[in-house]
Image (cartoon, rainbow, N blue to C red; front, side):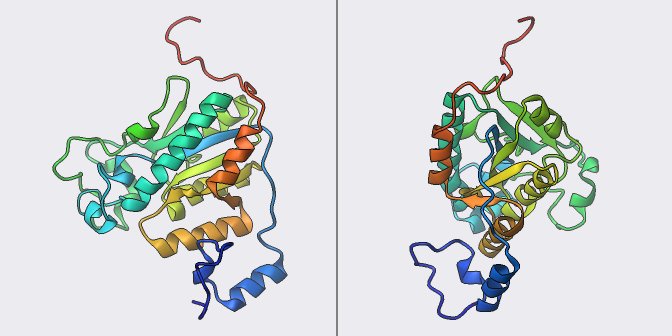
Length: 255
């Protein structure tokens, strides 16, 4: 960690306090971190903002993970109103809103590799009947929204996500959610690999470990995405034309 760096600088980013002077010099010389800009037809992508990653109430992460082992604790509850605000604005503007959440068998056999790197992988949340894969009520999907059920970190792996983005004629995604270093990053890298422009909402993502959150935001901003505060993302969304997309109707039966 660089000595004497002030995280209180008005233009400080979450990762600044973790970078050495050598790191900053290397990134600058190598040309990483250029601003790519927004696309013209974005979808709002909300990655895994469910009870498993938020817990059922606001509390410190050290307490929340005793019951919900993947919880982001208070950081999750700080991000929730930001994601909810962007979701409301996306509905007003008629932008696609796509959620991801988990899916698994009751016996967890299909968890596969998830069972190998965490000693608590077979646990169920303690003292609750809530399904951890349930999306948080503060940002609950509307009938016209799209929900992707996945089993691996990336929202693209083994799902129809890219097919739906092509159907919607999206050229870009605005990404929020969790965990910054895991499912968010994997989804961002895959979106980048599909030649989509990617924006990550800095304060709309969260993570259990602060260092991991900050350094992965830095890495995504360096190579795969523009990492921007929600205020700047909101201003961009407000400037978009309303009704750009032919969204699902959300109705049942024949239309």
